[in-house]
Image 1 (spheres, rainbow, N blue to C red):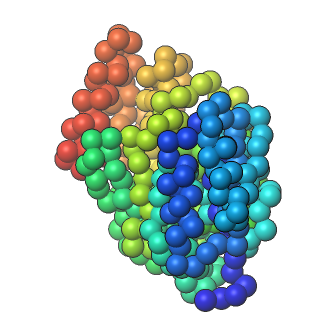
Image 2: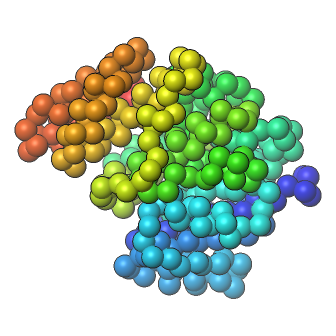
Length: 306
């Protein structure tokens, strides 16, 4: 292993008392230990922070701040971290024991990259599981990869400090698709490396996912500002992010953002099905929107076409 490569683990925490200890255990069980483990408690109202602090003797450091959203929590952790690379693990996800080891090897072999993303398992609330992976491993074009469905997951990714700081970190105040916003900024300026091995587990049914607790965003950042590059694959990924975000917001009652997405991203070629879903959701009575989308998600999960 390259002794100059150091990975800081950053775990944003908000009311994850039921899962944070298992998440931390998966980090402490790594075959190669990270430089440090920083938990940023984002104003939890349960005993999440206290549970994390039980691991202090094993090197876990808990930083507390007033609630400001996941982007600010991750950025705070990055500001506190000392590593050359940053790994962001959500407090309800898990790592395989060789996550740090495999990521360190990938960084050593491909030091020019700004983002390293592995395949990952998806586990639903009903126990069903699936696998998300890139179509091609190694150093490839990020925007071509995401055309076929793969998206880098924060819990299955490592970002170089240089890349993270050069693009300004996560978009403060953005609570949905904030990770995709960062990946676009990084991929615009750095190469991206994909690892085909599933090194993380993402729990779809975990408590307190952002899609369940979303409140109105207060942010200066917008995907609209990223448009206009002339790169078709990049433009399609932006459309995918905005349409997906609009569906979630529409379910919360924000039909204005949904209308904006329909009007400004209707030219998408690759995401017509999602656009249809958005249009249908917006036109349904509010009492039927969740039923329609639950059925849609269930069918998509069963057919693995989502």
